[in-house]
Length: 325
Image (cartoon, rainbow, N blue to C red):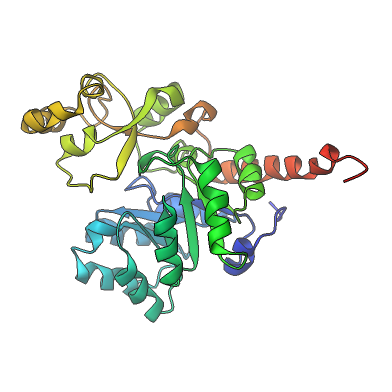
């Protein structure tokens, strides 16, 4: 599809469309990242907690597409050798989130590798700007997976005002179609990053049962908590919670999160014993945009439909203005 929307993000990275794939842990593998890049967007593989073999396989699967990579900051800081191994691959960009990423940003900048820092607070945005990151991603609490508690509609323009007009800013959290892209552009973004909508794509690295569960679920079914971090034995910083589709396993802890401390070992045993696709126990990570996810489609179709819809909406903008405007 030809380019319909031009922003500093598309110009800086030679993209046709201002759409980035969220680096969802293992879901955004090389195949999905390559499909998004091939469609004119920006593909990122989701390295998550940093498995070197998985990362190697993801880049191999990306083939001839120059894709970026996203990592969980606090986890990667515990693996300095892996930082160097990732940078040796010369990714299209290095995406960081959840922790003090200044050392990682500095290492990437020394290699001339573009950097992307996802933020959930204005103090984080200030730190990212001072570190010289190329792209800020303002993440609202509506997004699936880990984040904090600020809504995107207020956070995004505040990040834009803080960052100034020259900084590239993307929006994330609860965005799944052209309406989200058009709205984000009006709120000050140069593009958007989508996760849940691409999770429900043909190329995403997940089972058909998981994808069907995404289509069946609704945004109201999701909530933020630390239940699944405890169940998986992950030592996440307490300020970050995960938005996940709630199930029979997690709901008993919703009203009494303190009870998890006493039952953590039992929770881990139950969780580990469950089949991977048993979503009455296992985590189905997704955001509030599930209401907008009604089918499983090729990633390229998702990119095209998102941009076409946004372009049509933006073209209508003058119709809201009076003759006196």
